[in-house]
Length: 90
Image (cartoon, rainbow, N blue to C red; front, side, top):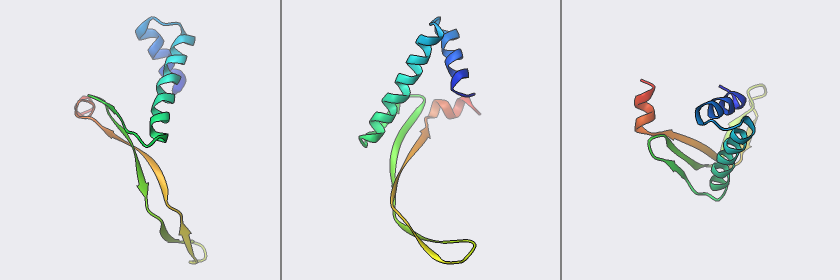
């Protein structure tokens, strides 16, 4: 499912117009992104938790030349599925 299909599904299940459903979907994504940027987690009970993890700097190798390269530290968004979501897909 892509974003357009998600918007259509939201519109169909809520009775909203497609434009209203798209605004709602965008607002949810924007809110989740904003909280993750602040370093907060977003916990949706029964669905899952969005968190930001810190990846430490490390050293890698260029596969072609074997030369060592430095990989900078970074923040990575992660999603952990909740119990109800896990059970629903089994």
